[in-house]
Amino acid sequence: MPLEIGLIGATELAERTLLQQGVGITAVAADDPVRAKEYANRHGIPVVHDTYAALLADPAIDAVYISEQNAAHHRWAVRAAVAGKHVIVEKPLCLTADEVDELAFAAADVKVFEAVPTADHPWQRTVHEFVDEEPYGSLLSATTRITFAERPDHGGSIFFDAASYWLQAIQATIGLDPVLAEGRSDCDGPDCSFEASLRWATDVMATLIADVGDQQASEHVFTFERATVTLRDFLRPLAGPAGLTLIVTPADGTPREIDFPPIAYYEHQLTRILDSTTDDLAAAVPRITLMDEIYADALRRHAAERPGEGAR
Image 1 (tube, rainbow, N blue to C red):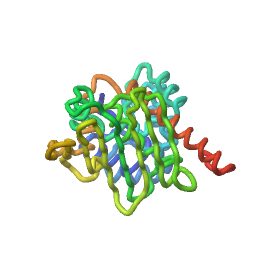
Image 2: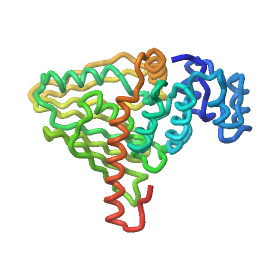
Image 3: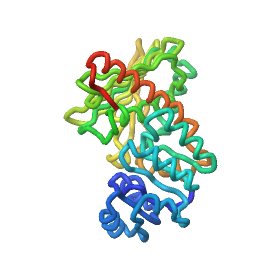
Image 4: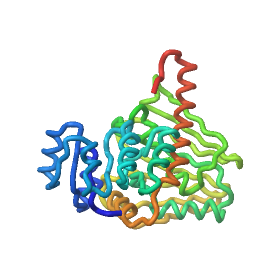
């Protein structure tokens, strides 16, 4: 990927993911031109465009980074792809199956990356080996819990923010070919808590429980026939380089720890994207399709329980 990048959105997220990683930014645009100019002055960005359309028309830009609110990701990703720009989009890449299909069609000649900072961490390969090689027997279930300290910018549901982390991890460890996908909210509307579940033909279940609490927390628990494998605090992108530990608890033995070296999530994400020879689109399509299916199921349940509420 080239380094002539334009920012669609003058955001703190762009500061953390690109600017603080030493990436030179060529241009920026924001919904407020004054804010874009202040942002450019603060970060030494040479060009400010008054509109996103003007930035996409800039021939000096090879790629764009989109960090606007979730509901705007699809629109500007498609327009960037049509303009011949490579695209890096903050998670979630899109919100619906139709949106990601349209993006895939528009991006025939460019690369598209979904920025999921937890992707491709070494622990995922280790758990995938456990699933594939079965040293602890067959996988029975996987449960993920994510608690946000504050409600994120989720474009309609807390699920959209949590689902990107969950589905990418499940895809990397188990695969994404379930036969059933369901969603439900435990509160008056889908915004403050959400439970999603996937079931495979083998009866393996994967569950996500997402909510808002006093402090951020995250955990994956993989239950095998003869052991439980636990990973805590996997969602720490702001903590700087952070090590992770898999705790393997055999049914009839002493727990052991598998330690992974500290990784700075945003630096790792940037390296993954810029050094990649292929993009994320093929892997992202099934994730977004399942996310859409789960959320639609939750809306149907919500509408049945509370007629007149629950519109996206």
